[in-house]
Image (cartoon, rainbow over all chains, first blue to last red; front, side, top):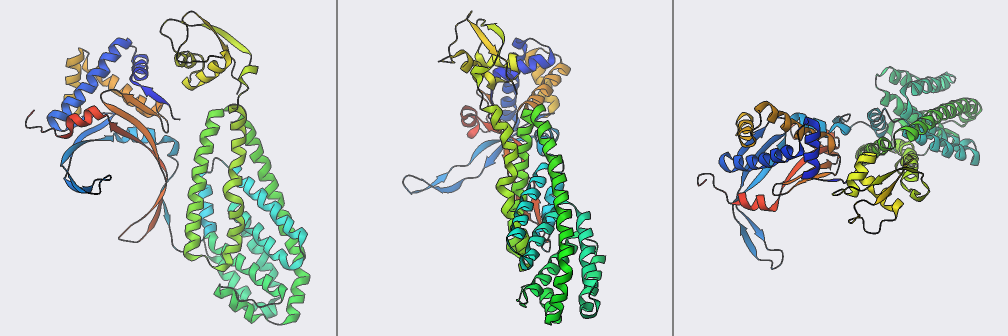
Amino acid sequence: MNNRYTLRDLIEKIAQASGISSRHADAFMRAFIETVVEGLERENIVKIKHVGTFKLVTVNERASIDVNTGESIQIESHKKISFTPDEHLKEVVNKPFALFQTIVVEDDVDSDALNAIGEDETEDIPEETNVETEDANVEAEEVTAATEVPTEGTANEAEEAIEISEEPINTAFVAEDSTEQVAEEPKEEVPTSEETTETEEKPTATEDIQTITSHLKEEKVKVVEKPVAIASESVEEESETTEPADETEEKASVNPWKIATIVLAAILIALLGYWAGYHRVFLSDNNQDTTAVKVAETDVTANDSVNESDSLDSLNMMPVVDSTASATTKNVSPEKKVTPYKRPVTTTQRSKTLDLPVRNLHQVQPGETLYMIAEREYGRKDYAKYIIEYNGISNPDIIEKGSILKIPEIVK
Amino acid sequence: MNNKEFISRLAEKTNFNKNDVQEYVKDFADFLGNVLEDNDTLTIPNFGNFEIKKKKERIVVNPATKQRMLVPPKLSLNFKPGLALKEKLKYHDQNNA
């Protein structure tokens, strides 16, 4: 990150890789540049295998405005150099992000489905989702503790949403459950139960989810005993068909057990997930500091993309039914997800360099720089700052030849 | 100038074997691909900078089908010519050369 390499680094690397002297590598690179320029001058194009294509492109003249005076000026036609990297080189450069693929965003996909897609992308980093579920879980529990039956519907919904984002099998289970609930009052509920069985047969998980959430809404409406008009048409219809008051009482007596079992199952899953996630974090912390940073980085971008698409989607076609569920997941997602990664990184970076043990001593040779020493000792140039700090060097640009530097043991 | 011409010209200049030259060119490409990470730059005086830039993810719409697609973020290698080279070739006319 943010390393600046010079021609010298490049020459050293080439000399090392091909086993020629650095003087020859130097001559080679100079000739390389010369030849590229020569080729551009002569033929406007230079194609180099493994590297890419340099091209001289003509830019047409165009009108512009002088930013200082506001006068309109004419920019002359001129040539500019363009470089297109070789296909293979492009792939190699993009390797850290190679796992991403272009996704088709469909208009009728709701945000839950998109979440599921996002998690597929970041399959190898499950901690994020676990943390999310855990947080949301706590939230949901708080809600249930604070209020009684009527709000349990919403808490349940939140749970549901989390489960959905976690694993589809689970939602299927819940779906069955809720249909059972409905089936227990068959006389009044004939139309709705039919509908649920119908939707169950549909293949995609999202549709199941939608029916579940709408069901929950419906239940909530009944328990509160107010036929509140909710945007989704299906919910409205259903609440209309099941008006009478005695039904609601029946429902209230059956529901708490079911709800309790669902909540318990969700908590169990979340805990398991969190446990697994914790172990992973621990391992990666121990082993690969730098890769952890990278993973965190890609992770953040993945999150970004998911969130972005999330919000886009919600703008487009969010019915009211979804808004509560997705809102709860959103509340939790952006900031909290990232924290567990940052912690190990920052603790290692904020070094207490001066407390570190001495690994070995190094006598400065003529022509050596701190960067070169750091690269030889640690394999990374930017670790020179540890040496600088450790030895209390005030001006890192000047080091005396023959002086002896203490090389600290860097503990990850 | 294609690769073959380029390599032979380079071999001529450096008095290296053509195969070797091709090897070294590959090493150069490896450096660009494997050593440079996000935001790293390789500065070559009198030539320009090679740098890796991260491109953010974006949503594109297929104008024909109106289909929206989420294009993932990616890393790309850019070359930015140095000022001297830019000026040198700015009004360059190959017929005069």
